Image 1 (spheres, rainbow, N blue to C red):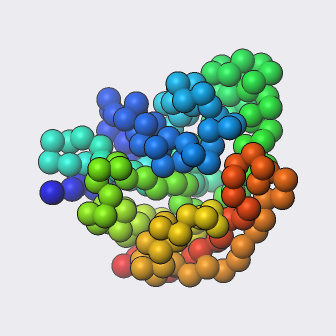
Image 2: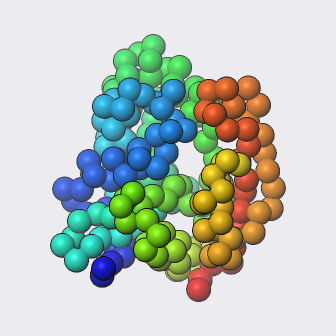
Length: 196
Protein backbone atom coordinates (compact mmCIF):
# COMPACT_ATOMS: atom_id res chain seq x y z
CA UNK A 1 0.00 0.00 0.00
CA UNK A 2 1.25 3.47 -0.91
CA UNK A 3 1.63 5.79 2.09
CA UNK A 4 2.24 9.51 1.84
CA UNK A 5 3.77 11.38 4.78
CA UNK A 6 2.59 14.95 5.23
CA UNK A 7 3.48 17.65 7.73
CA UNK A 8 0.38 18.67 9.62
CA UNK A 9 -2.94 17.00 10.22
CA UNK A 10 -5.30 17.16 7.23
CA UNK A 11 -8.51 19.08 7.82
CA UNK A 12 -11.53 16.90 8.34
CA UNK A 13 -9.51 14.11 10.00
CA UNK A 14 -9.32 15.38 13.57
CA UNK A 15 -11.84 12.81 14.82
CA UNK A 16 -9.95 9.96 13.17
CA UNK A 17 -6.67 11.31 14.59
CA UNK A 18 -8.23 11.38 18.08
CA UNK A 19 -9.44 7.79 17.63
CA UNK A 20 -5.99 6.61 16.48
CA UNK A 21 -4.33 8.36 19.41
CA UNK A 22 -6.82 6.85 21.87
CA UNK A 23 -6.39 3.41 20.30
CA UNK A 24 -2.66 3.67 21.01
CA UNK A 25 -2.71 5.36 24.42
CA UNK A 26 -6.20 4.76 25.84
CA UNK A 27 -5.12 1.66 27.75
CA UNK A 28 -2.66 3.78 29.69
CA UNK A 29 -4.81 6.91 30.00
CA UNK A 30 -8.33 5.50 30.41
CA UNK A 31 -8.53 5.76 34.21
CA UNK A 32 -7.72 9.46 34.02
CA UNK A 33 -9.14 10.60 30.68
CA UNK A 34 -12.06 8.22 30.35
CA UNK A 35 -14.81 7.66 29.59
CA UNK A 36 -13.81 7.26 25.95
CA UNK A 37 -16.36 9.71 24.45
CA UNK A 38 -15.03 12.51 26.67
CA UNK A 39 -11.42 11.54 26.02
CA UNK A 40 -12.06 11.71 22.27
CA UNK A 41 -13.80 15.08 22.65
CA UNK A 42 -10.83 16.39 24.63
CA UNK A 43 -8.26 15.10 22.13
CA UNK A 44 -10.22 16.47 19.20
CA UNK A 45 -10.33 19.84 20.94
CA UNK A 46 -6.63 20.11 21.85
CA UNK A 47 -4.73 18.40 19.03
CA UNK A 48 -2.35 20.81 17.32
CA UNK A 49 -2.44 20.04 13.61
CA UNK A 50 0.84 21.91 13.10
CA UNK A 51 2.61 19.61 15.58
CA UNK A 52 2.08 16.35 13.68
CA UNK A 53 3.29 14.26 10.79
CA UNK A 54 0.44 12.37 9.14
CA UNK A 55 0.62 9.07 7.24
CA UNK A 56 -2.10 8.95 4.57
CA UNK A 57 -3.12 6.07 2.32
CA UNK A 58 -3.75 6.41 -1.42
CA UNK A 59 -7.26 7.70 -0.74
CA UNK A 60 -6.03 10.40 1.65
CA UNK A 61 -7.29 8.60 4.76
CA UNK A 62 -5.23 8.93 7.94
CA UNK A 63 -3.50 5.64 8.82
CA UNK A 64 -0.98 6.89 11.35
CA UNK A 65 0.50 9.97 12.92
CA UNK A 66 3.44 11.17 14.96
CA UNK A 67 3.04 14.18 17.23
CA UNK A 68 5.87 16.32 18.55
CA UNK A 69 6.53 18.98 21.17
CA UNK A 70 8.16 22.36 20.69
CA UNK A 71 8.48 25.41 22.94
CA UNK A 72 5.18 26.54 21.32
CA UNK A 73 3.31 23.47 22.65
CA UNK A 74 2.67 19.80 22.07
CA UNK A 75 0.47 17.77 19.75
CA UNK A 76 -1.92 16.56 22.46
CA UNK A 77 -1.36 18.95 25.34
CA UNK A 78 -4.22 21.26 26.12
CA UNK A 79 -4.78 23.55 29.10
CA UNK A 80 -6.71 23.56 32.37
CA UNK A 81 -9.43 25.48 30.52
CA UNK A 82 -9.66 22.71 27.90
CA UNK A 83 -9.94 20.09 30.65
CA UNK A 84 -12.66 22.02 32.45
CA UNK A 85 -14.58 22.59 29.20
CA UNK A 86 -14.77 18.85 28.52
CA UNK A 87 -14.85 17.33 32.03
CA UNK A 88 -16.34 20.13 34.17
CA UNK A 89 -14.64 22.08 36.94
CA UNK A 90 -13.96 19.25 39.40
CA UNK A 91 -13.34 16.53 36.78
CA UNK A 92 -11.10 18.79 34.74
CA UNK A 93 -9.08 19.94 37.74
CA UNK A 94 -8.16 16.52 39.14
CA UNK A 95 -7.43 15.14 35.68
CA UNK A 96 -5.19 18.07 34.80
CA UNK A 97 -3.22 17.70 38.06
CA UNK A 98 -2.61 13.99 37.51
CA UNK A 99 -1.66 14.39 33.84
CA UNK A 100 0.66 17.28 34.66
CA UNK A 101 2.65 14.95 36.93
CA UNK A 102 3.08 12.51 34.03
CA UNK A 103 3.85 14.87 31.16
CA UNK A 104 7.35 15.30 29.80
CA UNK A 105 8.89 18.71 29.70
CA UNK A 106 10.07 20.33 26.49
CA UNK A 107 13.70 19.36 25.89
CA UNK A 108 15.64 22.37 24.62
CA UNK A 109 18.50 20.21 23.35
CA UNK A 110 16.53 17.41 21.65
CA UNK A 111 13.43 17.30 19.47
CA UNK A 112 10.69 15.61 21.52
CA UNK A 113 8.33 12.98 20.08
CA UNK A 114 4.87 13.47 21.64
CA UNK A 115 3.27 10.18 20.63
CA UNK A 116 3.18 7.93 17.59
CA UNK A 117 0.28 5.74 16.52
CA UNK A 118 -0.69 3.57 13.56
CA UNK A 119 -4.12 2.17 12.75
CA UNK A 120 -4.42 -1.32 14.23
CA UNK A 121 -5.02 -3.02 10.87
CA UNK A 122 -2.05 -1.20 9.29
CA UNK A 123 0.61 -2.16 11.82
CA UNK A 124 3.73 -4.10 10.76
CA UNK A 125 3.68 -2.48 7.31
CA UNK A 126 6.47 0.04 7.87
CA UNK A 127 4.28 3.05 8.69
CA UNK A 128 5.69 3.48 12.20
CA UNK A 129 9.25 3.28 10.87
CA UNK A 130 8.47 5.82 8.15
CA UNK A 131 6.91 8.21 10.69
CA UNK A 132 9.94 7.90 12.97
CA UNK A 133 12.30 8.60 10.07
CA UNK A 134 10.25 11.67 9.14
CA UNK A 135 10.25 12.90 12.75
CA UNK A 136 14.05 12.63 12.73
CA UNK A 137 14.19 14.57 9.46
CA UNK A 138 11.86 17.21 10.92
CA UNK A 139 14.17 17.52 13.92
CA UNK A 140 17.15 18.07 11.61
CA UNK A 141 15.23 20.69 9.58
CA UNK A 142 14.52 22.54 12.83
CA UNK A 143 18.17 22.49 13.85
CA UNK A 144 18.12 19.72 16.46
CA UNK A 145 20.99 17.24 16.59
CA UNK A 146 18.91 14.46 18.15
CA UNK A 147 15.40 13.19 18.88
CA UNK A 148 14.08 12.08 22.26
CA UNK A 149 11.07 9.95 23.17
CA UNK A 150 9.74 8.23 26.27
CA UNK A 151 8.29 4.73 26.16
CA UNK A 152 6.61 2.92 29.04
CA UNK A 153 8.51 0.00 30.54
CA UNK A 154 5.86 -2.58 29.58
CA UNK A 155 5.60 -1.60 25.89
CA UNK A 156 8.24 -3.95 24.51
CA UNK A 157 6.85 -3.86 20.98
CA UNK A 158 7.28 -0.09 20.71
CA UNK A 159 10.70 -0.21 22.35
CA UNK A 160 11.85 -2.85 19.85
CA UNK A 161 10.71 -0.60 16.97
CA UNK A 162 12.58 2.36 18.43
CA UNK A 163 15.73 0.30 18.87
CA UNK A 164 15.53 -0.91 15.26
CA UNK A 165 15.33 2.75 14.25
CA UNK A 166 18.53 3.60 16.13
CA UNK A 167 17.13 4.88 19.43
CA UNK A 168 19.15 4.05 22.53
CA UNK A 169 17.83 3.98 26.09
CA UNK A 170 19.61 6.54 28.24
CA UNK A 171 17.60 6.42 31.48
CA UNK A 172 14.56 5.02 33.21
CA UNK A 173 12.44 7.09 35.57
CA UNK A 174 9.78 5.65 37.85
CA UNK A 175 6.39 7.28 38.24
CA UNK A 176 5.96 6.38 41.90
CA UNK A 177 2.41 6.04 43.21
CA UNK A 178 1.01 7.01 39.80
CA UNK A 179 1.81 3.45 38.70
CA UNK A 180 -1.46 2.42 40.35
CA UNK A 181 -3.36 4.89 38.16
CA UNK A 182 -1.62 4.32 34.83
CA UNK A 183 -0.68 0.64 35.09
CA UNK A 184 3.06 0.93 34.40
CA UNK A 185 6.02 1.51 36.70
CA UNK A 186 8.49 3.58 34.69
CA UNK A 187 9.15 5.44 31.47
CA UNK A 188 12.33 4.85 29.51
CA UNK A 189 13.92 7.82 27.78
CA UNK A 190 15.44 6.96 24.39
CA UNK A 191 17.51 9.15 22.04
CA UNK A 192 18.92 8.95 18.51
CA UNK A 193 20.67 11.38 16.18
CA UNK A 194 18.40 13.44 13.89
CA UNK A 195 18.35 12.82 10.14
CA UNK A 196 18.51 9.48 8.37
